[in-house]
Image (tube, rainbow, N blue to C red; front, side, top):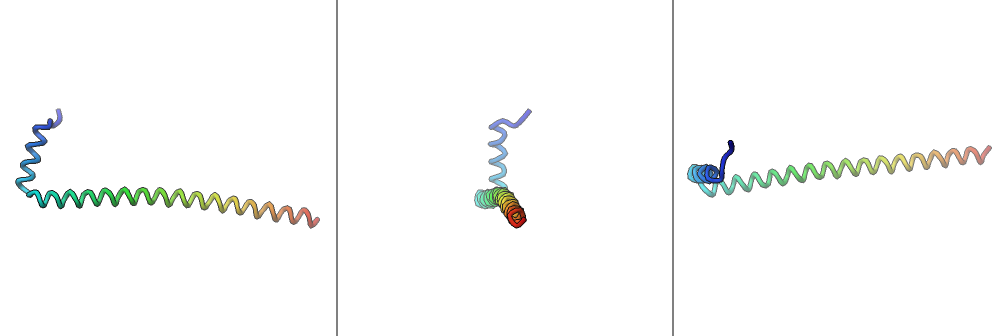
Length: 78
């Protein structure tokens, strides 16, 4: 048994009378900014972690290339 649209409308009117529309607008703006900041931080963390994994794979590739070059030098010297 949930709230219908009529009950939600009554609750909204009561809240608007108690807090006032300016206060509710400010709360909505603050809440929206907080949600946007949270989404930005989560997406930047994902971007950072994907960049780190790409850098690690590039370093591993470079390390393996260096090892192969060193082995080839040893073989050619012998």
